[in-house]
Length: 477
Ligand code: SAH
Image 1 (cartoon, rainbow, N blue to C red):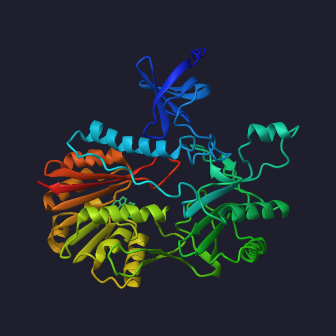
Image 2 (image 1 turned 90 degrees about the vertical axis):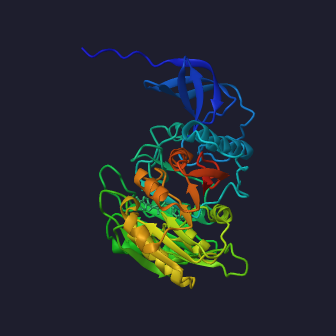
Image 3 (image 1 turned 30 degrees about the vertical axis):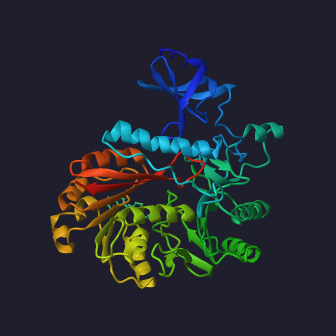
């Protein structure tokens, strides 16, 4: 006989005490941490526990007894379901405050080394419509909201939708009416292709049976005004594809790169597929102001599969912070680790003797080289490979010990072996750009063997989310 599970607790009057580092607000109940998504510090809430682990509960708000002073009315009608903007219910000042706190908490609890007062976080002037890239998914089984179900007796007319994955569910798509993340005409394009498909009876993809023609929609825009639209189809239905692409091209003449991909594999990745140009040019152009007085703007060619920072306005502030922290004199040898498409490397090249960039995505390295050429930068070299393998004594001997080391690793931070090599090569300065204060704190604790933290500057790249970037300047003792 199966053992009956004890019901999960219902917690009344739980006080929310922090915004949490993973975007789930935090309360405490009988010595246990309770994570409560969509709560705000200062709220008092009744919570149904939905997940019980040894050290923590996760709960769902059932009642808000007291509203936090930090709360604001979320703009978006999809708030609470969509995984995209989990902090929309916090006013922007509060978002910045709790991001700053996240950086401080990481340094206090994980790094546990001395650091100067953290500079006030650099916020965004535009906390909405800041993203230059969104990817949507078509589904013939969209997530049905209570409204959907109640509206129609016997169920909705159709269950097709185009939008975002619900957090943690690969086959559940939330149909999006309006998204506040990408500027016009992103919403118009998404709604137009959806309505066209509905009117013409074109099938939407099913993630379980792998049937249905329309699969993904990617929209990318650039500060130059360039606009790229990529439609991903699950099969080569020439006539329908031509009709849809023709419709988009006619309705949105501002699209400068109109492309499509045939992807009938089981997974959504198009990295190994041919991207077919339907109309316009095969890339969009980005520009970024140079940090060096009198130098021309930097240009970046962004192909359909190329990486480019998704909030360009804040990316500039982030790079400028790193640049200012380094205080280049002009004769430095600089390493740029995790260089991606070489944007930081190109950004600083005009102010130093030479930059060596390292990155493990081969296509990104090719883009980086092309971009350097495009900007007439001849003092950069890019190398390709896994950092923990590439960066060894031989590499350092061949290229020289850097005076300044810039590093911008992914969320996992740097491999310990990479940190050891940095300690071995002993650059005068390290500028550590991070998208995860926790792993950054772990890494700077190791670097503390020879380095002191001299400056700390958080930057808000992703308003309405819990994510925060942080730049730390370390100087050799
Ligand atoms: N500095 C760049 C990109 C930073 S994102 C920019 O600002 O645009 C981090 C980069 O690290 C990604 O391009 C990723 O491909 C690369 N990367 C991740 N793990 C790596 C590893 N083990 N070795 C080398 N590069 C790695």
